[in-house]
Image 1 (cartoon, rainbow, N blue to C red):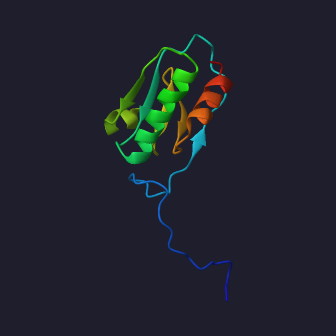
Image 2: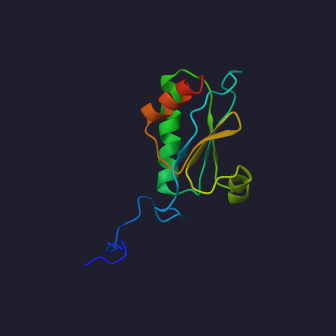
Length: 118
């Protein structure tokens, strides 16, 4: 019997292995950016499996787009916090955080880059 809208809690395994334990808020900012060209792409993370997966998927997306740019992988948590990122992995394009808390596959990364004007 559920009183006052309380639900039985089930034990769930976290979706990622990073410090968020699967409780991170997922944010994607696909608002267009002033198109000055794709100058920098960074993946911010703690070094976990999910962060490395986003790094690999971002590299694949950029190769598919023939962007000719390398992805920088930032694991220094002080730098990550400087971007205002509270959940990793995060994707930064031209110094603007466009995604955090989600491991996107390469086609999702490519679609996001096209949506924001690249």
